[in-house]
Image (tube, rainbow, N blue to C red; front, top):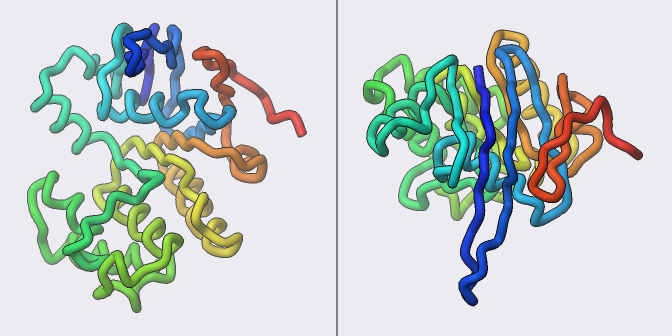
Length: 227
């Protein structure tokens, strides 16, 4: 489902120096797999996820979705590919303050043919599954960080994307609500979705089919994390 070849990414510092973040990343995640990416803070995990989700272009290398080389597409075509293939759970939620919880979830439908009665019902169903239906009419400023995270998850999966990218999806959740989100992600993988998540938690990484450690710009496959 997801494959990268030789992905390189760097940034220029205020002083003009080139700072390397990703150095030739090769990775493959198949449908039905949960892949966890771990690494120290600042190692480039979120940058890698942004490249995988076509939110940032790599300096070199390619990203492939379901056999399609999406890094070769123009900006508009990449946006369409992202809408067709990817559900993204952002670490900072990125909910729109002027929309209610259910309206934020329905944003995903606007990029896939528009909002219909079916998508409205689906949005409410997803909110119910994560214990947020009673908060559906509340605005982000009226929600806790954990509640906003659950809304962001529902938005990411509304369209049943074949690829879900999640940046610290349990970072703002207590254990009970973290378990709900993780159970939903694993269930989606069992139904054929490819799931890639960034995490610093051993218990979350333990749920993954495969674990990758990002260190020094390189991605190394690990069978399990050292305790």
